[in-house]
Image: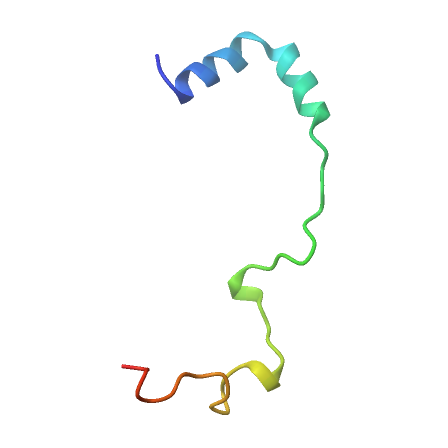
Length: 60
């Protein structure tokens, strides 16, 4: 066994230790991190008016 399988075997062999370790991990709510699909930009910077785009000579 190597790598991830060793880790999985260790966790399976030590369930009490695994639970104690899990209790030490703080549960933190993400702040300010948004998936690309949910990202909404203000109209001033969304690029739809041609702003914030490279010159035509650079965009090939």
